Every structure is written in structure tokens, then in C-alpha cells.
Length: 343
Image 1 (cartoon, rainbow, N blue to C red):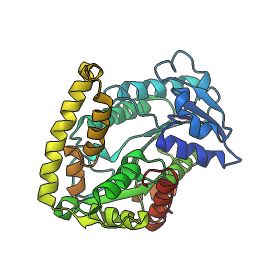
Image 2: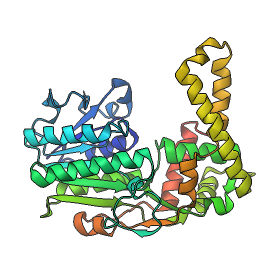
Image 3: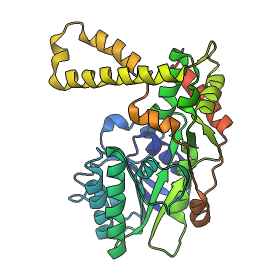
Image 4: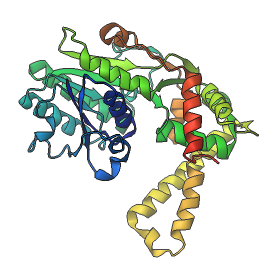
């Protein structure tokens, strides 16, 4: 069976390619947009090709003979619906049997309580709206013709190599001495380890359900609060001297920092930083301070009490998460120490 993976140079793409590389029954083609992102997969001696989604409809060599095409690339939200649709259409023309597209729990927006795939999307931000439009275009296309379609909605994907949910939080815990955020962190942290996400893709690629299209949540075995995640990750990192944050002060400081963040973005867009001799050092210090505090969207996530069910994935593809939170945090902490994320 031949798998072609677009976005192989990214966090999840790297995990997926490593998982597929261990399978003797799978032929793998790892597609990267830039050669600079190929380091992780190239060191394993995999078949890596440079393939831009913008050009895939003109040159379909990358997907020739593929049984399964997986798209885990991360274009800009406003471009993702069109690029995913074009790739699906190219796969239809090439006779690909199955197309697996990554989406996100962001399509659920601010919904709370128990959420499954029957809940209609209610995206609240640009990222979630882009994912929702992409899903709709693919589902509409698959209803007419083309490969069998799987849309996977992973939750909070963590583990080694995760910049957003592992590296960033390790630095916040180490530099900000976070232990708890009080009521500001009492939302549900739906963590799923990257290894389990990769396993879900392999399962989706190999099963043969009757229906043409499937949308599946992919979540981990334990649902803890963000406070619990921060506390247990800090223990795994062996960071001492941690203290509970004052939640009101924390949110107010985050709001002020976000204003600084937006001002810095404006300065960068205008090219003003190049006119200041000391700008690189100043920007570096400001960026480190800014990264300690969440954005407004992240603050809402930290308080959102939502539980994403993965029952349908278990029923249709046989998915069952296997990496416990303690094991995942142990791996993440060890990786952070080895790679100098924290001192």
C-alpha cells in the first residue's frame, strides 16, 4: 500500500512519517514544501520529494500510484479550503483510493459539555472558519465522486516536537514558574499524544468502511484541566519554585501583553525594526516576555469546559489512544531537556 503525505516536514507530519516508516507493508512518499523542513524525515532515509500544493494540479507525479493521500499541511486559513479541494480533485483524477485530511476541534468554537461529530460546527475565529469551509468543500466534492474521504479532527496534540502545546508550555512553566492558573485554567485540556494521532491515520488508511465520507474526532485517553496539565508537566520537567498565579492579575497582564504583541506585529509589517540598530535585541527580549502569556483566544480555551468524544473513531477505524498522560509528559519533558528547551 502506497501512502503519500503532504506536510511531512511539520510536527504531526513528522510523527506520521516515522510511524509509517516502521511498517513493512507500506510504501511512503514524504512531501515537503521546502527542503529546509525535511531534516527530521530525511535523516531516516525516507523517500522525500518537494511538492507545493499550489502546483500539484499541474504536476501530479508526487501522487502517481498512491493508494492513500494524507494532507497534514498547514497553509494560511484563507487558502486552506481551496488548496485542500484542489489536492482532492487531483487525487480523484489520479485514481487515488483514499484521501485523509486533517482538520481541528477549532470547528466547534466555544461549544461546551460533551461534543461529538453530530454537533454542527460553530467556529469563532479565522482558523476555525477556514477549517470549517475546507471540510464543507471536501464533503461536497466527495458526495459527487473521488476518493473515499476521512476528515480527522484532533484535539490538543502534544508530545516531542510540538512547538505550541509542549515547547511553549515548558518555557512558560520554567520561566514563569507556573503551577496553577486558578479559575483561569479550569477548562478541559483535551490532550492527545502525537503518536496516537499518527496511529489514527494508519488505521483510517487501512480500514474499508462502507460509507464514502467520515468525520472523526481524535482525542486522548484522559481529560484533565489545564491546571492539572501545567502542574503535572512542571513535575515531569522537575521545575522547582512554582507558584499559583493570581487568575485576575494573570488575565489582565495577558490583555496588556496582547496589546504589545499587536504593536510588535505592526512594527514588523511596516519594516520599522530595520531602522533601529538595537531592534533585534529589543525584539528578542520583548518576544520572550510576550510568549509567557496567552492570546485572548487561548485564554478562552483555558477556561472552556468541553469534552470531545472519540467514540466514533473507535467504532469506525478501531482507534484507541494508547499513550497515557503520565507517559506522554515523561517523553515530552525528556525531549525538552535533551534539546535545550529549558535549562
